[in-house]
Image 1 (cartoon, helix red, strand yellow):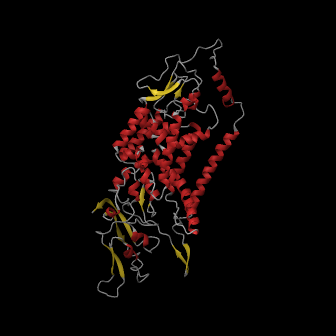
Image 2 (cartoon, one colour):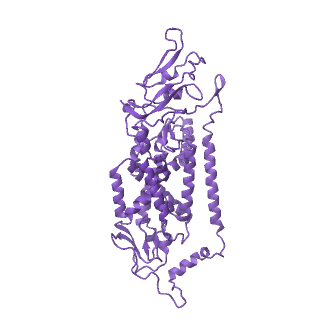
Length: 540
């Protein structure tokens, strides 16, 4: 019953978190946004003491329930592990804790957190890793499916769906997500919870408290027959039967597989605070006259079932090996196909695109991002420093941005953390979706009315690129017509000449940095008017 309850809760949490990254409308966040806020790293970066204390108390009471129920990456590993060994017995065995690696990674994580190197922090955090995996691999498939329904609905004069543009937002982030996915799948396929108990800093943090858990699985040495079934079912490799019938509670994730597998009622989950987990009986049962340990029927049965795997001369299980190799090739091919398909939506910077219009064909060079003095961070972030020190790089704000403005940064210092750019759209004044979904406090929740008073940057004009100023055309004014705050006015290039062409002029006191002027400027490939960010945002 305990395992069934855990599995049901784990599936619900897993589906809820995954849907948050798939829902590009932002509607689900009104109901399930709290699921992201109770993840450990976002709570720490948001200084959400209520959630942090609640998770620590939960761990002290019941062990690492967080890892087996709430953490989406942990639940994903359980799914992979179950698929890898489905229908097989004796799949795991006890292994010693790799302290040097486990605590080395944890020390690196803490140092990076203190130093503000959140790109490294996000690389190791399980919630952020799962967000990047979903955003880069599941979200495109989800959006293509949505677009299919949109085309079908449109033919029946229904607009229940709308088309969503699918494009590769950041190749470095895509590659990191792919490597992370492959590494986790391999580790989970072979050894279950190796990532959780060796690499994951959140798991290591909770392990300091789980070893003192009040409720936990306990081995009754008087009933245990040393059949090793519980040890072979333990995905955390933390049950040591031969070494004293003990459980390493710092690595136990309370999956309850061991309790379910025990045939002699020797494993119980209950109150055991401050009780020793080590057996009081001898470590080895009495040996026979030939130096062999007498075998119970359970041991004999287990050995018969695993004889082929223990015997070096036994035939190799080619089916399993072929399946693993085929899965790896399929995963690699899928990733490559996704890159190619997504890349096709974003032409190379120097490749003209031909579009057919009423006047024939026109060559349009796609826009490229200008070199900005200061990165532009979303409306609601108090400053560039504050944003990047709180951001978990989970891509949740990128997932819900309807205007294709937010994308992961390619800058090494802020790698994978979002930034604003206006090649594909601009930040509309009425949209505040990113501020509604951020779980880490990197983007404060604001209203559309507050957004018009929030200044994240200002527009700058490069006269030599302006089509009017350099004499390419006689009239434009695109930037001024679409500026939502009236910060751009068209003025005479020669003030004293009434026939002079009109060029844009920016009133920085009115500009909020939304990027409408940069996005709609006809100059290619660099806009004649571009936005530079403010280090500290101004909120009038």
